[in-house]
Image 1 (tube, rainbow, N blue to C red):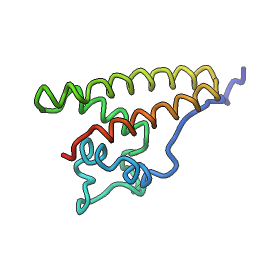
Image 2: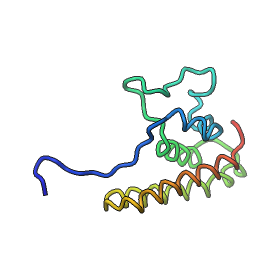
Image 3: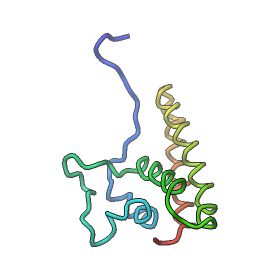
Image 4: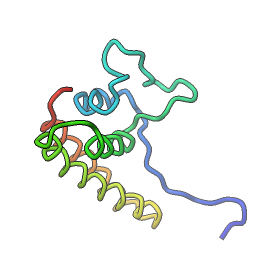
Length: 124
């Protein structure tokens, strides 16, 4: 193993604007400060947090678990949040194992889960 250089496999979103276009209801739900007409951090101003696919999944998980909402809404969101949590954990493991094809398959599964959550989420 190299002493000073390490190879790491990672997954990143290359077009954060596409995230908002692909999952507008989820983005508005978990990042209300980026709602149309609000000052947007999308586009990469220095020092602003990333708002990619994995960040959306994590934010959705937090929202489903901790946001103030009625029981019926929480019950509708929780299955998607739980699935995203499991998929993200498997993705991290695949990346750590340098299992590129498995990681690719999991990124597709994460996006499919976000698609399903988008279809089943009401606008805030």
